[in-house]
Length: 450
Image 1 (cartoon, rainbow, N blue to C red):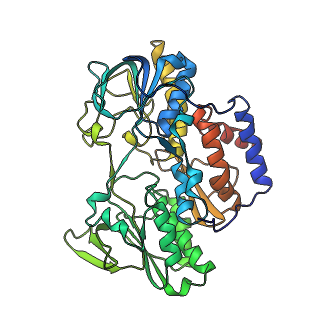
Image 2: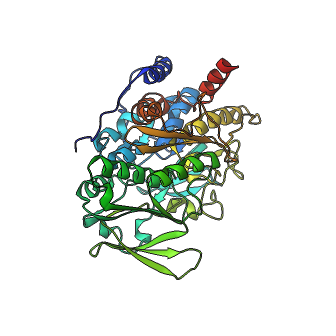
Image 3: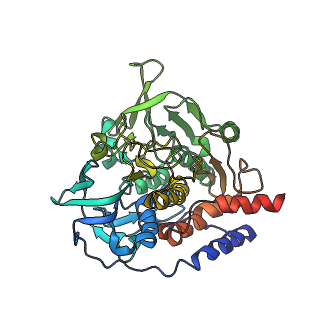
């Protein structure tokens, strides 16, 4: 796949790169993990469940705290993906190959990689079980199991992806199908969906809509495209400042947004999508499509749903300020698998990792956690091939912006950050445990303005 556009750089990009280099000077070169893929023993000081962004980040931090030999990561996957870039992969602006690396290359050197799937959590006995019949005990447990995709909850999927004209940026198996559907578009409805469940990166379902509209304009197809965003939500975005900016873009670009519409079936052979009106249960509408982008329903991993660590909805039940489990003091959660009432993003994980690091440090010393997570999360709302609105906000859905300018404006500099600088920061700083979110940058910028 050839990228549609080349990302440009400029003075702002150079400033960001300089800031990032300051952090990576202490991080050291990337080391290939060479540990065994099976547990060498059955007890660890710190056991991390999950090899995604939260799991790897916390493994790196815990390695510095208790030593690599006392930390293990349980993760069955052979590859680790930087999923935020899939928005740009689906629009042809990045290649899929740039998003993944071998799991062995991101697990901190010396940390044990237990290449297995968690099948049971037993926090009352401080142990877990895996699908290779191992029982592993721990002193401290960090749960970072992510979120589970449920394409199968939409009738006609996932088998419908075998047909053309349909894709999804949420899976490594289907993201390139989005780009193919975009390229093959001729005339008709381009439909984008948002499910009636929690999702990771809640801005992504509409980002691909804006990028598709930009692509249609670039290729002379815009007049032949009727662009529809059918969302189960009642608003375009949960933070008013950014919602207002997005509504203006929707109006200017003549996009159709239908609220409280939930995708329940895909008839891929007929190129039809069926939506239920959530305000009138049982009432459905069939829309024919020339292109369909599906955001799947999502939920907590199956292993958590019936676990003692889960709340009634199946998410890891943690204190929203400390990330410590509400009932098991030696258990902690981070990222998408938790019930933290904030948007599920990689940026949120970065901020949470710094807080959780401090929480665990104090718990290990039999002290009370003092550092509090404010719900910081970020969503770079890609509105074109060279523009981004950088939404940053907290638990209260109030803007919590890093830079000393209005981030609700579309900016080239923020696109550069999204497309090039954030992946660099992710691989070189966050996964090595040296990036706890932009709070320090926020302080520096705001001090400079005072």
